[in-house]
Image (cartoon, rainbow over all chains, first blue to last red; front, side):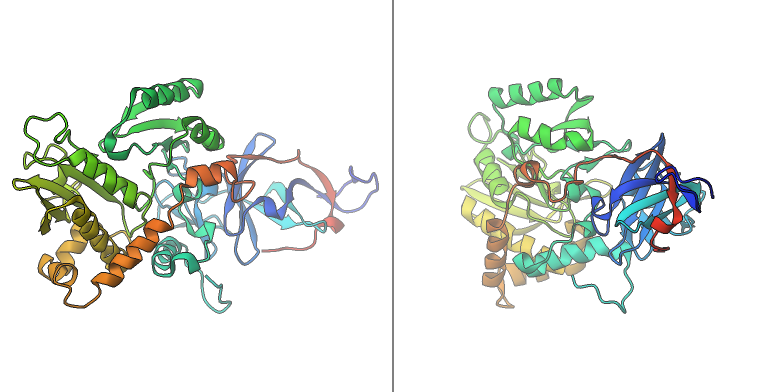
Length: 119
Length: 313
């Protein structure tokens, strides 16, 4: 998305994102739930330094995915061990619908930027 | 655990591997919080709605009016949705949100009951000799001693214990992971591998001893052997059947492999290393986000693309 830049007032390519704060708000290898304009998103920070974001709630029984175990590009829901691919949101070995995923990147200032347009 | 670049991280193995390494390496193990199940990151048991349950330690299930009043006051102050007496003779405060956990622990002023982890859980007791007309052994004193010694000892799966003051077995010690039953002559039978859950199995008698100290010694020795040899999530009743009671008696009682003294020393080291996680992390979280249920983000707004460093995925 392009348009005038509300941060600087200058024009140029820009996109709608929200700042989630410094990357170390999420402990390494873990996830954290964020409330973003009424939307609940789980942000994951892998041991390898990658960031992923998915819907916060497991489609199976509503488990908090941010409290899950993360590894090998997957998250395991803490309630019933349902597993999902973090990048695609696809269920792994279960019949649940895929998770909504979001683009999340590290900004130039070292903070996490989450793009609210679905990835 | 050093991360080898060439190896592939396997999420389902992380917790079991961390559990094994912690047992084998003790203080040398470099704790990685993400290799813990959520229960062990926040020292409480996650419930179906994402809240947690809090079970304070009540040694041997013996409490006092003052302690009960304090628990009741905490439950009222924090509007705890359910207060439940557990099967292990404990009081469970259910429906506590993650952020509230440290405050609830501080208000209780009691140690963690470890009702959330793969570890020594509880030692249930019957009334024993103090009041019971039939008791032949002081099961409450023994149960309290067992619990003070083994609280927080981690293992491949949970360990639920009991001490019974006579063979009527009111505390159901014969169907616990470890149990002690008083018999005539001032003796105690030490049972291992009992179960009364999804499977029902009467435990096997490991040995018969004549003092509380010897019950503690043999229970500790079995626990250490179980910690070292069981598969992750293998309960004692499966482990005892797999290894066989004869083999266990020969290793743990007759000491045919000459490892009994080492097992005793290892379990002693684990006992000595115990720290109540509620008092430690309730006062000083390991990470600022440890007890944060949900973080606030700034409202979405337009950011210039040049601020984005690049795709990290």
